[in-house]
Image 1 (cartoon, rainbow over the protein chains, first blue to last red):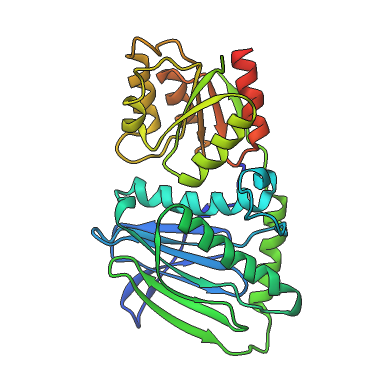
Image 2: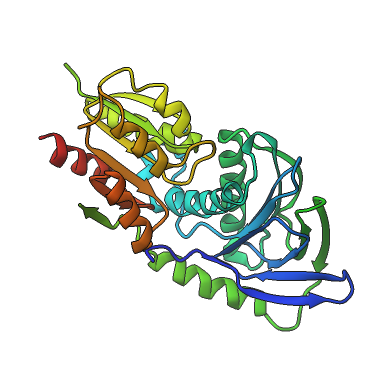
Length: 204
Length: 120
């Protein structure tokens, strides 16, 4: 695999919601045609929750952009495409969207909800903000409307998403004594930065 | 005359990015947003066709099969540009008639290099 972006495999039975639940870690995505619930914990990372409103087929991803964006990024999307920021973010979004389409979701009926992008520690301010900016730009470009969002701020979030119904349950994480989220995201950031950004090419 | 390339991908941002990169390199670009849309463009003869794999309506493999049935583009070299990297899918692509398999993420410069290699 050239990309550090994987389908989530960590599942459990959530007794409170009475649903099979898939837990997403940073760098993962998952989509479902069934009644599963998806859950993730976000600091400065973002999660896009996308579903086909007609069939209820949908899913979630969890990622951050590994590099700084240039201030002129917005002016010319294509010229700055060689910057791995856009490539990595594109991949995170495309893998989720492809997975939903492969399960029978129809892009025409997609809606999105976006979460995360907090300022978790001092230096992460721009990380959170540019993650939010990227997701919004990407969805706008793909003509997928954002029907709700809970982004930025300084607190982490635990987000439960039920693609079948489109419901979100969101818990704010009030200053923890440990720094599990930061540590997990920092580890993921290192991994994302090592992701190969050049294509493997096979000539047949 | 500029060489004409057909680029098929369901992602609007991908069509924009790749389209601009190829135009800047002097190619003429026609885009389509899935295999079915791609088939509707095959009345023209292209110098090369670049296609995504996972798309609604008609996927990349079915699209390649359709190209191979098309009198104008039977011999047009086809590049598969996809997030899919499994050997099994690559084999299917090769069997259908793809000439090159490129796994996203990629640099536009890499795609231009491949085009140059195919088209001289």
